[in-house]
Image (cartoon, rainbow, N blue to C red; front, side, top):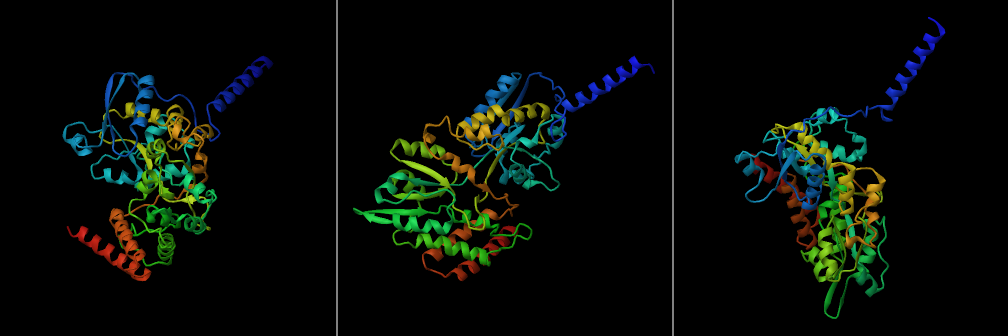
Amino acid sequence: MNLINKKSVILMLLISVIASGCGKTSGGTKEADASPVSEEPVSLVLLNDSGTEQEYIDQVAAEVKKKHPSIELKIYKSEKGSTLDELILAGETPDLIVSYNGKLASYRDKDLLYDMTSLIGSRHMDLGRFEPGYIDDVKIASAKNELFGLPVSLAYHALYYNKSLFDKFGVPYPKDGMTWEQMLEPARKLTRNEGGTQFRGFDIGNMVWASQPLGIAAIDYKTDKATMRTDEWKRVFELMKAFYTIPGNMTTGKAKDDFLKDKTLAMYADLSIASELEIASKSGLDWDVVQYPSYPEKPNVYGNASVSVIMITKASKHKDRAMQVVEAAVSDEVQLENSKSGRVSPLQKAEIKQAFGKDKEVFRGKSVQSIFKSKPVKYPIASPYRGKAEGIVRTKFNEFVNGAIDVNTALAQADEEINKAVAAEVGK
């Protein structure tokens, strides 16, 4: 081979290596354009089968219309006349469903679950854009590591407080990173009767949420047997009771109204309540937010985060086109708008996180970045009787708080009643 030919071969090899390198991400996954999909006109049915705000659905629809005008999206909200069962009976089985991870398993009985893994691969979607924990949370309905949907947003836990009451009583505002035990002191200082009005320092909200960071459940998902007689559950019962036994701080059963409407509750632990805070702010609530309380051994960790997901159904006859809708739903453009609107995005991108709440007047000047200082625990695989079991737990906790029974009796009775309730359901 002469010198000129040798140089030509070497140059071609170099070009080949450079080209192959440019077609890969740092993880080695090709970023080449996905296989083209027909843009023939098609009508797709999307069901919002969760509490996901219509604003987000509208953002997705607008992005689809911009990028794929040949797709007509028929959007339904799950309500009387357009529930999933009613749509199926009407011959309008959804191509896409927006739901949440804890509900995914319920679609198995209707044979709607579809493993999107191959479509995600063929479209070269980068799952590395997502917080890895949220992808895992979506897989709780999977038996073989299937991915039945992609995360689009999540509910967060936070501690909201009424600044006016702290100022009124000269108590320092709560700080990020406080433990449950540390919350007791300000709760005591803020619980008082002034001018005939009873002010309460703190309401824990749903006491079951306080158990979740400890990795305990009311019922074992493998055996469907109650699991209440443990030291961890005893710890939760006793610690949460300590707040309600502060003289004057007994729960009223309407904590959210006490905080948002009556403005007699100083601190309130809850999920994302942006729309309700928006209304309350207009009526004079001067609020702010810090991290949800944690346990010393589990710092910066709160309970289960319900992850909203978008899924393609097995029944869809246009899965490639439905995937274009999914791509729009998780795109940087839509997720940036999602974040600006005050919904937590599942994407890792710092720019998207930092944009949280910027389009919402209610979040102006608030410490909303505190929300991102904590992470949820891994969403648990749950028994189908979880909801019923946790209802019994709350009932027994209330009896314990009211002094009707001691803690050991409360846990034992909860155990027995859960097992009886499950046996009754199984026997139907």
